Length: 110
Image (tube, rainbow, N blue to C red; front, side):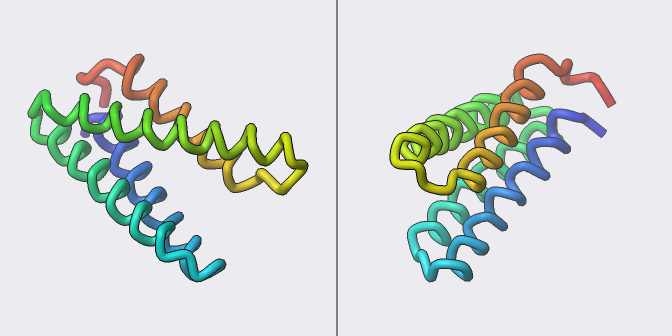
């Protein structure tokens, strides 16, 4: 099993789960919608990676970069206003780990 594809599948599921948690915790429909859509796109990228389709990598990288930038901004904004930033920091750390896996783990690593 390809480690990049597996990590991407888990990351996509966590992003989708985060959208559900955001909806349950704060009744945030944007969290549910964005988490669901972005999670599904990342999972689609992982399925393409599993099948050996080269289009999976740019899909996963672009979506993960989008999430990284968004939550990096939320973290900086929260730090500046002294708000709780735990969720933003957690998602940012997961996103950076995912990017490192996508860029530095060889596709043949099992």
